[in-house]
Amino acid sequence: MAVPPEHHGSGAVTSMTEFPLAARRTAWDGDTAEAAIRVKTGAEDAPNAAYGECFFWHDAAAAERYGSYKLLYCDVIDDEIKAVPHAIFAVAGILDGARGGTTIPESEQAEIKTVVAEWYEKMAREFDDASLGAPWARSGGGGT
Image (spheres, rainbow, N blue to C red):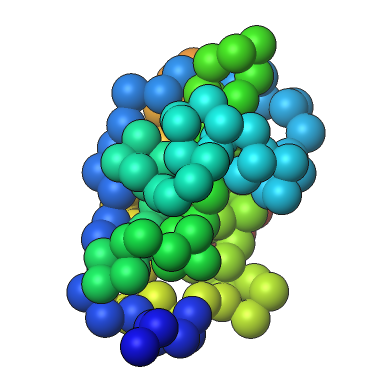
């Protein structure tokens, strides 16, 4: 029996990866990025570990289903997988309740927030912008 998309059995949070950051102003199109990630990671027929590293979370009980992977933050740029700042900003917004939030269990959202905050720290360093910070980690919201 297929697991419905809203069911999150045993989720898996992706740890901080070594993907390089795309330029800060790189445009974000999740559908286009997901298609490119499938090809670049060799996951055209089914998700694999490399594909999963490009998402902050997946439902480990249904890892064979593309729909089990949530919160994509990477794209293929110049034939290299890179973390896209605007994707990370969008994920932070979702975790902070934007777009209706997410159905990922709260305990796993807390883990994802920790990883997303690490990406914000990396962006702040690489873009030399101390004002960058995860919305839930500082007052005033924003983060873009």
